Amino acid sequence: MKKRILLVDDDEGIRTSLRMVLEPAYEVVCAADAQQGLELFRRESPNLVFLDLTLPDVLRIQHLLVQK
Image (cartoon, rainbow, N blue to C red; front, side, top):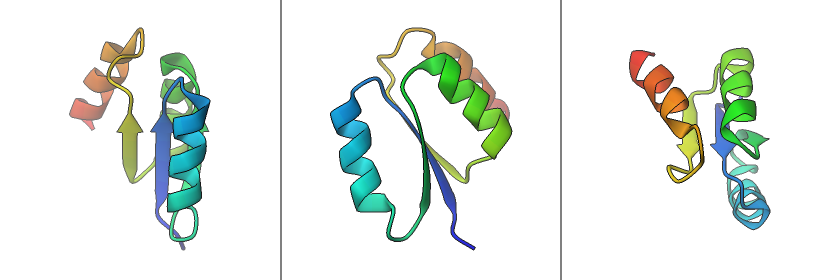
């Protein structure tokens, strides 16, 4: 079973590029904003999160990640 990575970034080009590089070895789940990222984080339980720290509302996700 592949490890799961969550990509949270509002730039579609970055999400696409990272997905292309990571997908051969990992299951990749993408979110375009902090709210969607938070929902996917709770539902998918990723092993690793790539998080765009300049997103609006990103502090909620950061707080949750630190707690986990």
